Length: 315
Image (cartoon, rainbow, N blue to C red; front, side, top):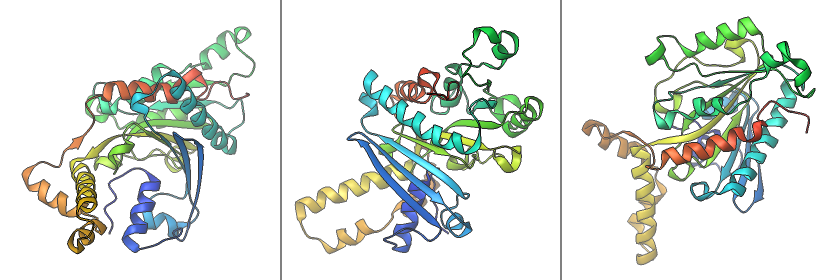
């Protein structure tokens, strides 16, 4: 059994390929890649059957990964461009599931008081909710506006209620046609922290990437399509050390030019060995960058910019 320890479908695909020495696409999985510009790349992983789903441990569906370089140094122009790409990819998935004026519920998962887990609640604050305006003052609303509701349900530890129970209750009462779930994710690469957005039409299992799985939010549990938007905000210490070791070996190889032992070490995935060494010491922590507050703000702007996330779909 492969220990993926990441929420990102494209990372799981790459881990499976490496573990099984597969050069081409995994059976049951199709991949498309495109470059928007020198700083933004989009990869689409389509899991088309159960064979592909079982291989990488993700449900059948579409996973779009948008990688944005240098987001830590991003200015207004870069954030705006990234937001436009997110909107473009979201609209493609929206169009498969809902009409332009169908009701949508946006759910911001996470703990607003824990910075790496606060992306969902922060995005919710920037979403224009419209359902009440359309109901009570429709004459003041753009005719292309769709009914939007939003909720940040908190976490089990502070509410005593499973997030799935809260969301299911809301869905049963207001009857939206689609749910959008926004959450922080875990990655197996340091460079993807707050530099990647994954959009999936398969829903989400909150906490899965850090070993704290809650009840899933999906069409199976809610009865309507669920689109998940996630941004990696944490990696395990074992991942951090593994990446550092890889870079260290690269440096040694550049200096030594040839060393059979180092070549053999580089080809291995050392994650499990490093994790086994860290766990007994209690060092296998979940880590996040020191500038996480600024990174969260940048990503919040990318995801929610100009309220184009879901309110006005006719553009």
